[in-house]
Length: 408
Image 1 (cartoon, rainbow, N blue to C red):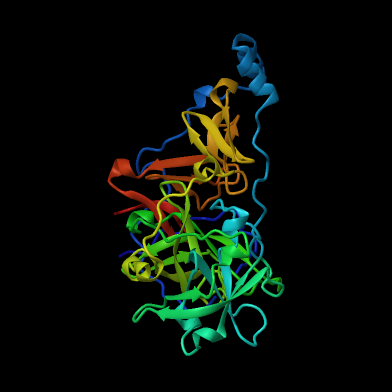
Image 2 (tube, rainbow, N blue to C red; image 1 turned 180 degrees about the vertical axis):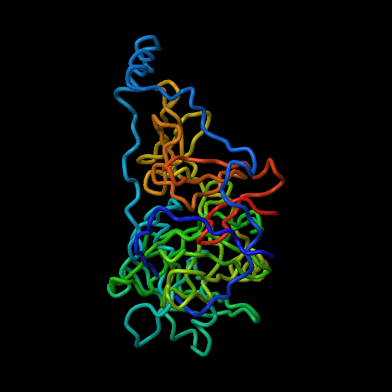
C-alpha cells in the first residue's frame, strides 16, 4: 500500500494531553489523493439560502410571524458547548451520560493501596469489566471497586467477591460482593450489542479512566479519540497527539452511542503509546459477548435516554438544527432565517450559520459525514468530497491527511 499524501497544514493544533501506555505499531495507510476539486464531485451546502442582513430582514417581513420571532428571539444554541480538552474533561463530551451513568466508570483498587491502580466499567448490576493485566496474580478478595469522581475520596468502595479472566484476551470480569446501586445512585453501561466493523473506522469514541494527567490532577476523566482500526479481537483509537489515555487508565472503557440512542461499552483498554497521546488498543467486548454473558446474563436492550441520546452536540435534518437542552429537544429552522445547518466543530456541534461555507471549528483534518469527506481548506472555507460517488468510503487516514476518501 502507498503512503498517504501529505498536505500542508495551515493551523497549529493546541498542545493537549489526557490520559495508559505501552507501544502500538503503525499500520499501512491506504492510497489517497490530495484534497483537490479535480478528484471527484465537490459538494457545498446550498448557498441559495445564504442571505445578508438586509435580505434577512426582508425575509422576516414577508414570512410568517413565528418565523420572524424565531430569527430574532431564538431558540439559539448555547455557544461553546464543550470546554477545550486539556488533560481530559470531568464530564463526557461526546457520549451523553447521566450522573448515574458516569459513576459506572470505576477505579480498580487493591487492599492496602490508596486510590485506583486501574480503571473499569460497571456493565451489569454487580459486574465490572477491566483488563486481565490489572487483576492477574491478585486474589479476588484483595481487589476493590472504587466509585466516584475522586478515587482518593470515593463515594463508595465495594469489595470484589470473585474474578474471571479471559484465557486469551486482556479482559477480566470482577463480581462485587453486593450491588453498588443499593448504596449509590449508579447505572451500568452495558456492552455494545452490535458488531464493530471497518465501516466504524473514522468514528469518534469516548474513552475514560482514572489514569495520569499532564496537570497531575486525580480522579476520573473523559476524552474523545478517533477509531482508526478494527481487528478480529481488538480496536485501536488515536488521540492524534492531542489527547489519549495514560498510565492507570488500563481496563477503562471506550464508549459510543448505539444506533438505538443509548451509550454502550465497546471494550477495555489493553495497551497504548508511551506518550499518552497517540494510539491505544482496546479489547473488543462485542466479539467476547457470549463469554461475558456467562457472568452477566443476557445484555439488556436499549435504555430510554432524554432526547433519545441526541445530546447537546445535536444534528441537522432538512436544514433544521436539533439539540438536547435540559432534557428537551430544541430545534431551530435554519432555512426560514436564511441560514444553513452545519457541523461547526467540536465546541459547537451542529448549528445554524449565516455562511454556508463557514468552517466554524471544523479544521483541516476534517471529518466524515457518512461517505462524504468534509474539511476546512487553506482559505478557511468548508469543502466536501463525495467519496461514495467514486466508489470509495470516507475514513480517518492519518494525522497528516485526516478524514478522506479511501478504498473500502
